[in-house]
Image 1 (cartoon, helix red, strand yellow):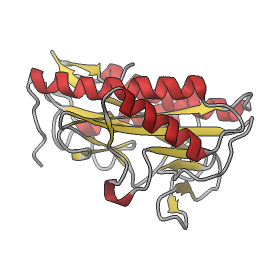
Image 2 (cartoon, rainbow, N blue to C red):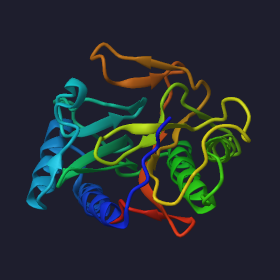
Image 3 (cartoon, one colour):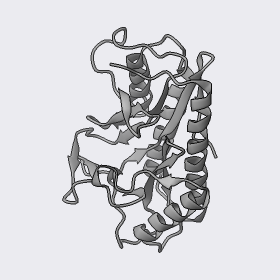
Image 4 (tube, helix red, strand yellow):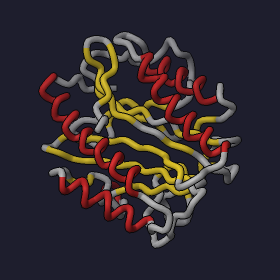
Length: 251
């Protein structure tokens, strides 16, 4: 496994791409309203990305048809925008990628539409808090499997389970690169590659209620859990600088 070590100038380029992602997510969170269609939201996101000089990197990636993954309610990741309209009480996951000057940014949020129930808010809080807890624990020299264990404990400690078979990932001049970073420990935490200064990667806890086993819907993109229940997903892109994590996808 060859995990890239980025120079400071490269990290700055990744931060510039990440800032467009963060600003776009902030813009959508503030402006998405009940009654909008998923296609309208996708168009809003694409227009905003382009207005900031970025290119939507998901559009056409592996054949994905849109700029924004719009994952509604039980869809946890890779939701394809359609004419379906959102309504009060829904949960909407927004996952965005940007390419700028040959470097990639990637992040995601899950937001409630209007008033949402306590369980749904708990899911959102869990995915966001698991992400921020893991980021705060990152140190130069720790193993990626330790990070996966931290993510898993943060999720299961709230009574939820992580989605299986999907994971965080390296990122740089490719939208997805080594390493893969599951949200659960597979094997022993004292094995595998170590985190080093200059590494850049995305962490993205994907939180399910009862079953973490995934299924893909008929559109060949949208991923749901086998329990059919609602889910939540958060993601940030980070760089390891001076032994600690720096978030690159802030607005």
